Image (cartoon, rainbow, N blue to C red; front, top):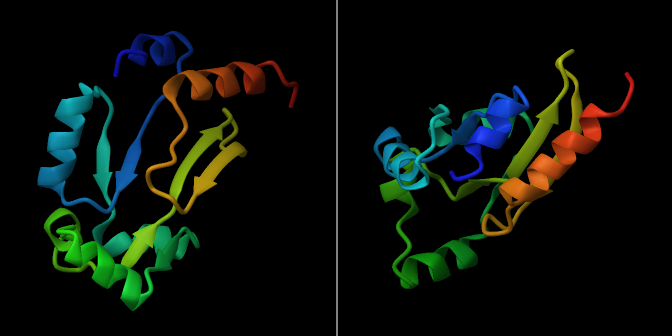
Length: 127
């Protein structure tokens, strides 16, 4: 992650929570050159508890499988057509969520530059 120093300069900790099994998270972490932790959300249990998961309709899951997508290989045997919503949060020093980006399309993610802009904007607000 080329922008990591900018997060460090701002004193912003980053954590990834993913339903991907630890070995897949390790590959993704290495590809990103990410110095921050990746946590395993087995079966998307945490996402479900937070209301951040949805069930893929059987027909849509079948289409993924027909195109060679094997979610079980990435998410383990506990995968049951449940997908987490892609969520990015900015949490202030008091532990309050002050900004959120939520998308059901797991490809639609905020860029690190956009996130840094949000952090800068939110850090100037008076609590």
